[in-house]
Amino acid sequence: MKILIISGFLGSGKTSFIKAMAKATGREFVIVENEFGELGIDGEILKQDLPRSETDAEMKIWELSEGCICCSLNLDFSLSVLTIHNAINPDYLVVEPSGVAMLSKILQQIHRVRYGDIELLAPVTVVDYENYLISKREFSEYFDDQVASAGILVVSKSEGVDPEDFDKLKEQLSLADDVLFPREHYSKWRKEDWDRILTRKLLITEDKDKPFSFQDMEVPKEQALESLSLVYPGINNPDELYHALEKLIAGDYGRIVRAKGYMGKKHGFRFELVEGTFLITGMEKVEHPRIVVIGKHLKRSEIRKLFSIDLSKPMKLKISKERNL
Image: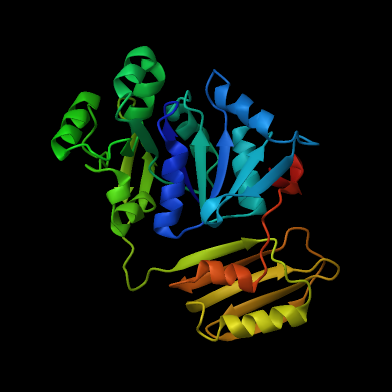
């Protein structure tokens, strides 16, 4: 699970950027909104919009645009990350903190919960071109920390801005040389520009003056695979699954290299698929059904329909804290 933090001061356009990223990359993300700053502005609004949890260990999930799902947990942040990893284990977890959050503190928190396949990507900071001077002047503690901790700095509300003005902004913000700084609005980005967001690693250093550094990961095009995770598939018996898998390997849904999953409301069953052959077996009843499909040129919406995915209503996952620690 790769964790991508997208920070930015209040009103900078973080949510709009996340939606554009999901659409442009064709990836699916689990998005968690959590409160980290001393001022609970965004957190209080989120609590009012969502029904209250029955327990502290309850995770509510609902669908966003482009097939992404969003989570809200009434847990401390470290436990929230582990809960999502254990329950859903998405390819990408996007963290959208409050606009008045200290990004450096969030990075240190996430660094402490890394284990196994949990990996940190270079954080994105979204800066509002129209209002950044006000934010920097009046809320410098938050603004400067978000900029200084960024691995990628995205300038929003900049559709008509010239490249020369981007250069002036970079100088005003005193960005380090290793910070990725696209000199155009993200609506003009190419696919490779978006891919760099998802292939830039965060490295924690022991240098107090520069605690973070970044490294680009090279993914050879001929070996690049994409994956699609389906939570709560609508298939209820092995016969339905058999027919779905027959269609999946026929070639109309992309180049399927690998797929696996488990499901079943009354009686559990699972499947393994490798290069056009699959096996369905029984297993104990499962509480949280899911499917993972890996391949190239995946037709995501068609695959969701094939497995009858329905995320139109909020879902609840109750997971004890002891189970996740």
